[in-house]
Image 1 (cartoon, rainbow, N blue to C red):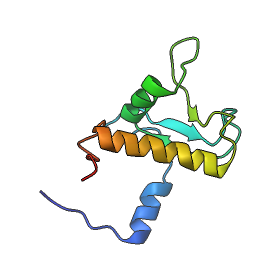
Image 2 (cartoon, rainbow, N blue to C red):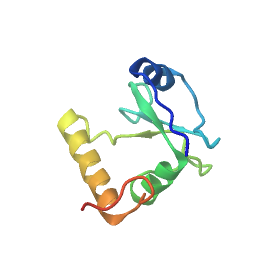
Image 3 (tube, rainbow, N blue to C red):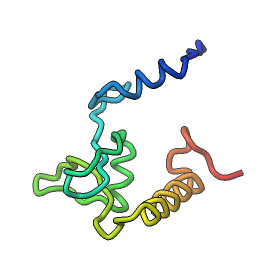
Image 4 (tube, helix red, strand yellow):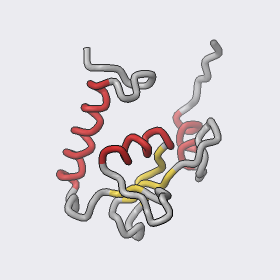
Length: 106
């Protein structure tokens, strides 16, 4: 297996390049700080993550499409948002939801 070594600047350039597709060609979904989509965009989510979120917390529009993801308006402070993300990520890790990327706690 060939391993790529990137400099910090290379990683910044890769991360800073806007794209709405992941490396497998799947559409990435914008992740906003608040539900209005007028707040800052935090980043993009892969389709597999969006589908898992939908099973738990995301609502689709009238056409059944997920056009963006955001924190619910009741999660308006950084500590509340951090707590929700922490619980979600730890639960996904510990239950093996994405076991090819993150495994159960050892």
